[in-house]
Each structure stands twice: as structure tokens, then as C-alpha cells.
Image 1 (cartoon, rainbow, N blue to C red):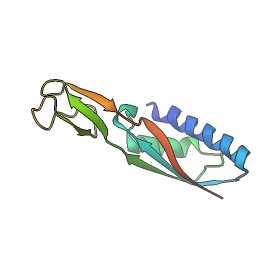
Image 2: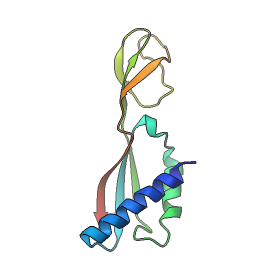
Image 3: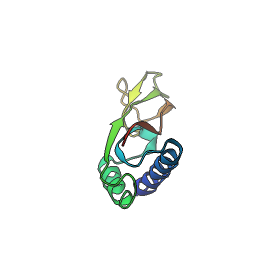
Image 4: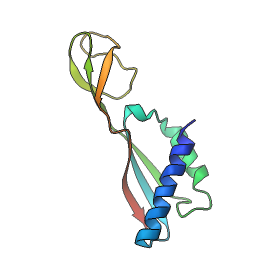
Length: 113
């Protein structure tokens, strides 16, 4: 379950930004997640709640927004968007897809007090 370590990294970034911009509390965090990040949203939300205990983000809402990746089928050449890595080509059904663009995991909007 790498979601916990991802959440700890996010909290580290939030703490650094709090020191730089002098905010005391985080109310909401938006995270954009591509298929290659291999994040299970429920596990991420649970892990964030656990990792945030005793920090400036305790009680903050974590919003996860899935972002599809661009991929090309190595068998038929069809290009399109995929929401999961183990998704078949919409044209030929092949699972031999090459992901060309994926955002991974990125912090979006952060609401602070």
C-alpha cells in the first residue's frame, strides 16, 4: 500500500508551503491522479486521514480527481484515452497499449486558513 507514503510526501509539501506562505491549517487538498500512479482512491483517502493526524492537515478533505492517460495500441495503432493500465484497446481489444502521456500524481488546489 504505497498510498500512505504518497500521503506522507504530500503532507511534507504542505508543511513546506505552510512555512513559506504562513498558513496555519489546510482545509482541502485536491490531487489529480493518472493511471500510472496506481492509486486506489479509497486507500488514499484513508491513508491521508491517518497520516494527517497531528499535522496542519488534520481533518482536511482530500479530493481525488482521476485523469485519463493518452495511449496507443501496439497492434492496431488506435490512439485514445485510458483510465486504467489494464484497459483493452477500444478498437481491437488488445491489451498491448503504450501509454504516451500520464500526469502521474499532482497536487491541485489547496484551500488553507
